[in-house]
Length: 322
Image (cartoon, rainbow, N blue to C red):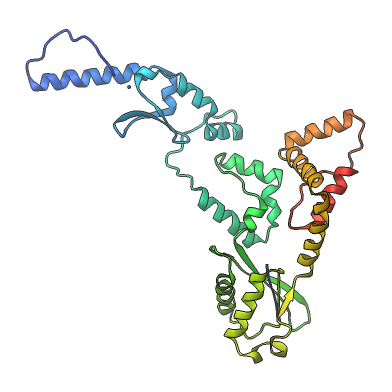
């Protein structure tokens, strides 16, 4: 088996209460009148009035944002928020004929959303680049406008993926993701080794490994040395002489990146331009319209590269220059 690790209110009172109960009754009447006057504006239909840290706050029923709720502040700022509230806009965008309904109880956790996104990618073996697909970004924004979509490089950073390549009894080649784990910093040899051995032990394949393909970096070199020290030499084919295989694609990528560094400034300018025009569908449509108006042939869709893959940089440059 081969493994790849990759508000104040005042009012006049027309009588003077003589008892405590009458005082309380007047107080309640004043408070009720206060609330009625403060909530005359339709803007209050979208907010709840709460006392937080000794101050009156207007809490949005949709996104739970807290605004000034004192009567002296008026309601213009509340009306402005209702028009721009991302949650309310998302609900109306989904069904324009309907009236946006407040979220009863919802606490958005961006960290949990990021974890669930990574788990989805692993479970269904989606490409990491899907987080940069315009359609997926629009769909996610519709579900929760507060979620800031991450890049594919962010998804990759800090995670160790172990992929097993093996041949079954029918001599058919299979590839299967065995582990997709987050590795805490620092990403040194002991931390990488702990994540790797945990995967091997979980699958009980520590004595069935023939080779391990890793990126060409010193941390991986040190990890392999530590790994060999944990197992008997006879556990590996040829006593581990073929255990460590350096990823040729990674080496080639390092070579090409070194060559591209000569024209690095030009590549960066093209990358920034492509990132802007491909950032949203509206920008891309404007780019196509401009090219059409100028009579410039546009046969290939511009696409942003992944800096860790030289072939994607070649395709980006080829498309931009064609």
